[in-house]
Length: 319
Image (cartoon, rainbow, N blue to C red; front, side, top):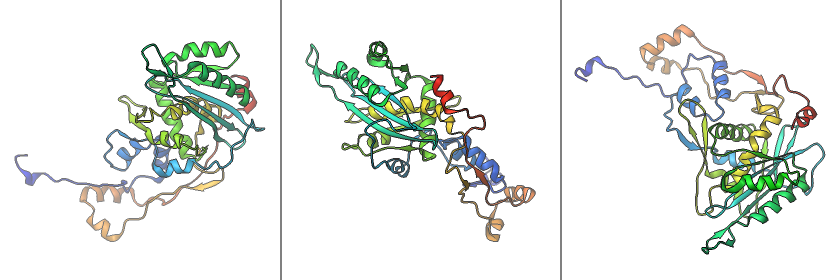
C-alpha cells in the first residue's frame, strides 16, 4: 500500500441492515447447517470445520424417558449397522418413525467391542454375534429398512441376512452424496426437534454426537466427519446416521419444519438501528440503507410438511 491515505477499511460485522427479513429467513432455511449462512449473511469468518451440533442441541435430543419394549402402533422402524472388525467397534441403532407427529425416536443402540482373537492374537469383533444381533432386532422391531456400510465385510454379512429376509440396504459412509445427506439429515432433524434419544448407561450415543463435525465441501455440499478417540470412531452414532437420511425421506424431508406445526413466530435478533448507530454508520453503507429504508421486524410463517406429501401407506408400499 503505497499511499495509505487513499484507502479506507470499512467493517460491518453483523447482519446487513437493509436486507429484507423474508430473504434472511429463506437463506437460513436453505442452509440448515448454518456455516454458509453465517459467512454470507452475517459476515462471520467460517473456518470450514466445526461441531455438527452444539451442546444445547445435543441436550435437546435426550428427552426420551421411557423405552418401548416392542413395536408401537403407528410407528415404523428402521435400523443402521456400522461394522468394525479390529480397530473399531461395531455399532447398531434402531429408530422409530411416527408419520402422524413427524417424530423419530431411537429405541435401541448397541456397540460390540472386539473380543475374538485372530491367528495373530489381535482381538476382532465377533461377526457371528453381530449378525445374530441384527437378525434378532429385525424380528423384534419388524424393521422395514436396515442400512449398512459395506466396508469391513459388511456386504458379506448383508448377503447372509438377506437370505433370512432382513431388508439390508447399502449406505456407504464414504460416499460424498451419502455424507452430504447424512450431514443434512442430522442437522435438520435435530434443529427441528424431531429426534428423541435415550441416555444409555455408558453415555455412548451422547458421546458419539459430540464427535461429529461437518465440513464444507468444495463445489457445494457437506461432509459428515466422525472423530476417533479412545472409545472408537462414533460407531453407534454412525449406525444412526446410516439410516437417518432414509428416515427423513419417509417423513417428507422436513422441508419446512423448524418448530411446531402451529403458526410460529420466527425468532430473530433484529432491532431498528438507533440514531447513534445511524450516525456512526460508514457513509457508503448509510447511502444504501437510506435507499432501501426500514424493513419489517418479524415475519410469521407456518411450518408444515411438503405440499405434495403422499399418504404414509403409499410410501411404505414402495419400500
